[in-house]
Length: 537
Image 1 (tube, rainbow, N blue to C red):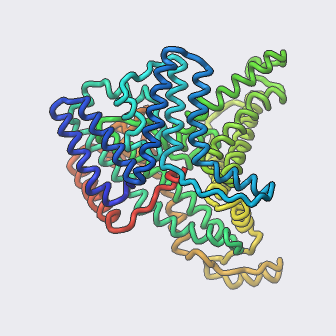
Image 2 (image 1 turned 90 degrees about the vertical axis):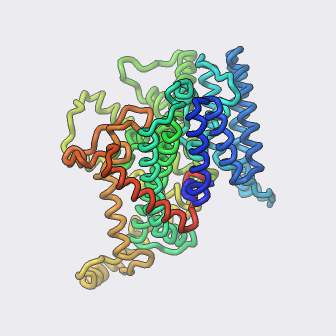
Image 3 (image 1 turned 30 degrees about the vertical axis):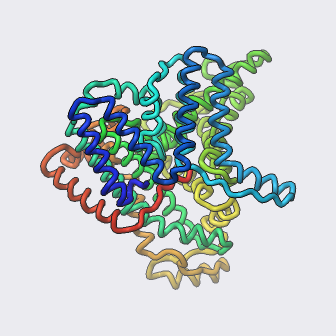
């Protein structure tokens, strides 16, 4: 069941919300949680009832493992629990990929029936691995099976995150105020939900119509011109931005309507001034998981191994090149390799992860060099900051070409077009004819017209980039009323100049929000719903 489908918007959500408000109206906290748990299981089973049993089996096994770990904090038991979850994920997500890769190398012509990837398995697997790890480290275990099932299956965050720590949810479930109807939370949650739905239906889905033909052409082996190639890469980068941002807003908004605040998961990542900054803004809970449960254990293991071999360890923030490679580069690349593999079973996802590993290594090396040379971290002028943002965005777009492409070959074909290897695209101006012939006579470059995009579509892409880089994000629009667990963000420069643009529960904003909600729900219900991009992961 999709958040942007008529079944969800017109039937599921109103019924579930009405039932929840009825139970909370009677002060029945346990019944309200049980109602949401049953509704979440129904929500998941709507896609394919067969995989509901897989989800429940995973929940039961991990719950029992958590109880066992609370009694015996055994590293072996933890390793067994992690191995169970990883093997479950590996079977459904990577079996076909590994068999095909072995067959390509060995040439045995193996035929394996296609294994359907269960919806949300990547997210609920990571969430439960974090739970087991935390219990092993001494965090209180959840002894109520219904509450644990609610923590894993809560439908706003079940399908594509945020990846939630159990202590973030249980601390709210134990709050008596959560069982009372709170109109302010309901209003804020509905506002955030409608904003996210608008991003998905009116922006992301339309941008997909620009990006898909270009990536399909590259996959088919067709040469893509310079402007077309850049238009496709930028359109997809913006599509993914608004699609995932829209889903995150909808998840946070839905959870708030039921009295639960989820962690922030998206914070204007294309405004990042470095790749390190980008990963602190993009899929923030995934970055948190990878840092805590992949990167940090690798660093600890490498540090212990070097200590046993009596190799030098860093002192006073300075490292030798060998130590830097062992303690920074190696854990970073391996962590981003895991990130790439987690995102999908394909060589292009591995390249995506390794590219970001390389980016992060360069970023860390630059910071280490500045620290070694004692270069002060003074406030950068606006032009230098804009240059950093542009360079970071360029690196991200190049990696996202692999993220979207159907294969490494298709990605390299599109990147060749972006580099101008295929041809030079048409110049959309009145001097197009002169420029075309001058370039052809002077440099021998044959200019082709735009094949996949129009000038209007290029203007749309430029407009969306301006929106991404200048306007406040959803959390900033509502900065007076926290929408997530983190500290509310500072208002954007637009809001500082025009304070009236900040959302508040007033009659005017209520009318605007109601109009947006009605319009966007009608638009969503009038067309066939499209999946969110992160559903495939």
